[in-house]
Amino acid sequence: MITYPAILDVPRELLTFLAALLAGERRKRGTRAGTRAPSCGKQALFALVWFRERRDVALTGKGLGISQATSYRYLDEAIDVLAARAPDLHDALQRSHDEGRSHVALDGKVVDTDRLRVKTLRTRSEIAPPPPDPTGAHTTRRPIAQHHPPRTQPRPQLGR
Image 1 (cartoon, rainbow, N blue to C red):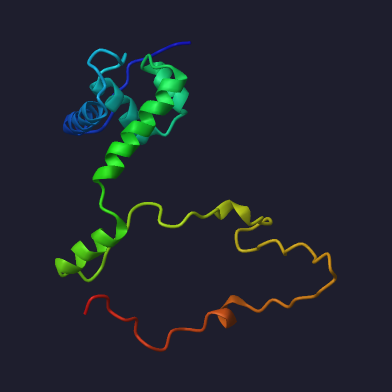
Image 2: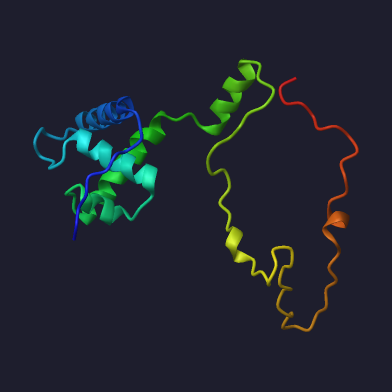
């Protein structure tokens, strides 16, 4: 296996911030100093590399001298300390409302979906028909426009 140096395009302050959060979590758990092989800084670097590049966890850890099992555990710990600091959806919406914002842009996964589950044909606009019903029942499919008529009333404003 060949290793190579690389540059991670995130601010050094982010590495320091995450390392401090991880150190605080280790103190909270009562982890004694020197009982973990990588430092909090190396654990933070590992997590930031994974977030930025989304490569295989074990391979990313191996490149930084961290075993596969430890890589998964360290990534989970980093995600947990970051998630503990993030506001939940209700808090974020309330804060936005209190600040008088009319719109909110959500960045992240809100609903788990599987966009690749629908089989397609040769072109993007054609969708494969569903398989025949084994009971022999026949269903008619209406065009999408009939399922969702155009909105005739304006959308309600949140918080007004």
